[in-house]
Image (cartoon, rainbow, N blue to C red; front, side):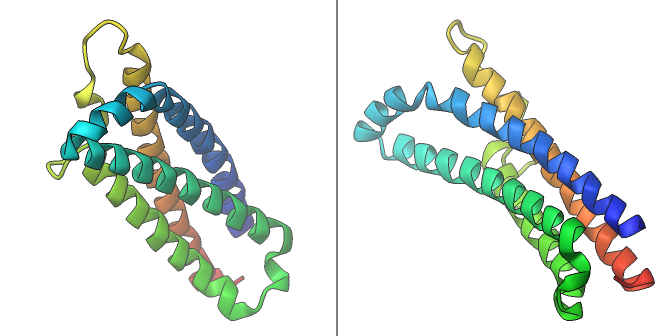
Length: 161
């Protein structure tokens, strides 16, 4: 029952994360055309655009995979082979953690500052700044999901599936 509760919690956390990720991506898309024009004349702008796309996509995909795996474990966990049940949680913990590190390294930098430290205090940048806030929330969600997958790994190991 404890394991099922953890997976239900993961579903809720991932659903919240998906909403944050969706808003961040849609807000960043508003700046896509201007960034594409700049990318044509600046290799750094092109690199930044590519990293923005890949980090946002990796966060969204990781959150959705976490959601789907949690749903599958809640609805049919006992029907999966025992090796799959025992390995899926540690595997998901690694995947979610890796995605979080990848995103954080780009958005917050190697020094680990908050994403929102990059806010631009200029008119017409409110949507960009909101995208940064949502990206920060997505990073927190990935942190919570990592912890929950580690917890489900420990519970599965101790109490069994």
